[in-house]
Length: 406
Image 1 (cartoon, helix red, strand yellow):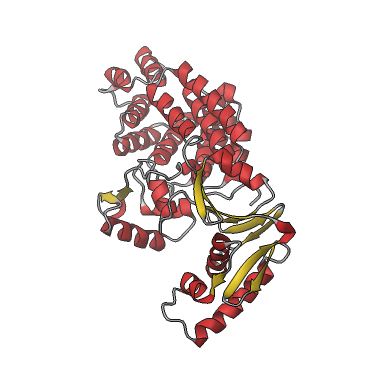
Image 2 (image 1 turned 90 degrees about the vertical axis):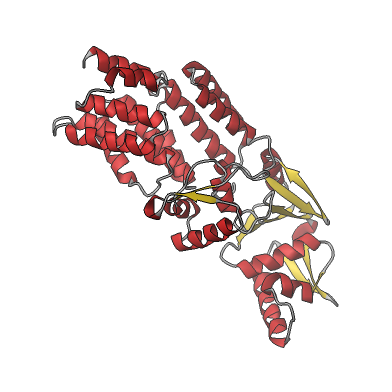
């Protein structure tokens, strides 16, 4: 490798893409193309960066398997930053395996870190933990160690382990200082802020208050009966009942929990669960059926008893009853929370991250755009969606994922 290529590579590691381009901007050999692609990515021109990296990968010969794998890793990182979650993760796994076989442990570790980041973004915490656990942070550059620590922090935050998250953020801060890259320090600061802003809203006995993440952790470790509107589960002690696929039942139990210890009139339950403005006998019959199903689901956690006017929730063991809700109730809250990270998302990437169909996401985006809540740039497959930060929403590090014990 010649002196200019070496100097350009060192400039990129130091976060100086302009310095790298000054050395290789006029060169079209494969190493220069790869370095130019990485430099353009650091400058934010992700489309041009991907073209340069693909050209570099094609220009490297069959014997340059390591160089081709490095280009694949760089392209995977660009896809992750640009929220192109449709990019095939198997290509990154293959590149990581090639780098490990050829002894390039540093870039193999970086590939593993990228796999962990993608899994965290899509809410697959188990895969993210496995990918992160197989990495030796000592092999990573200071910049990548920042990302590795932030992945660990993100996993801990979604698992509601705030002490572990704070330790990981402290490691990320130390690595960011060592790297000397201001953008990384800002990213660490933004992640640390997620521990201080409201992560949920507690509703109890007719009142409500905001909770930070450590408050949510303490609540779920207590012995109260929690109707969790963030994950659509009911939990009391070690017992957990998921109603994520039973929206009517969850609407009923949330209404009962918000009114506890008072009862809820039948007309109010009909309006809440079935959106029935004028209830008739068929609605009342259906309510009786759904209440019976709810009783069966909550067996061992709570009873649902009939009163003169409606129904009342009676928790087992004399527990208190609370509702844990998002800090801001929105029809498309999870979608807005993802968009609030400031990145440009495709509808395909949003569907992957939320675990739903692309058409469902497209309908939600169209509704939000009509209301002026989101905007798009580009057309067709190049269309990307953005939204301004939404006050009161948790960081996307908290979405989407099951809560601890879920």
